[in-house]
Image 1 (cartoon, rainbow, N blue to C red):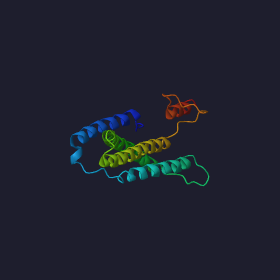
Image 2 (cartoon, rainbow, N blue to C red):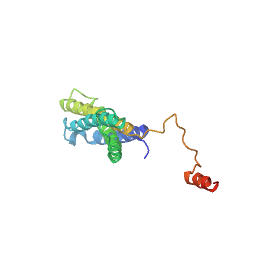
Image 3 (cartoon, one colour):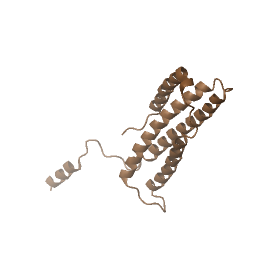
Image 4 (cartoon, helix red, strand yellow):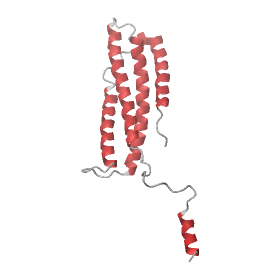
Length: 168
């Protein structure tokens, strides 16, 4: 599995932001107000993933007072992190587009409400992106130790064993 590309997340946020901006610009008067408390879930998930990342890092480094972590759990956390960073990029783009549209006329009370909701949503989406990337980074498998060189690419332990057996 490849690490999540930041360029991909930026592209997702920009494309979604452009689409949402066009939709909002064409039909702002017909849309209901943006709920202020909807992004609370995104913020909660971002904070929970940051705490999870700290716990997983401590467990993977075998710090005192921690239990070993099952490799399957780490794999599931990587999947969660990848999905979270993608959803955070979607939310950041959408809420950022709403904020960008309504920030042009904050003298309207409806638009100032939507600007606050859009700002909070964009911040929560960005938090979720960062938390997902941090959790994914923590779950990476470490490479071989620096003091022990990796075996050559054509090394075959069974072939070497058979050759030693024949020389006897």
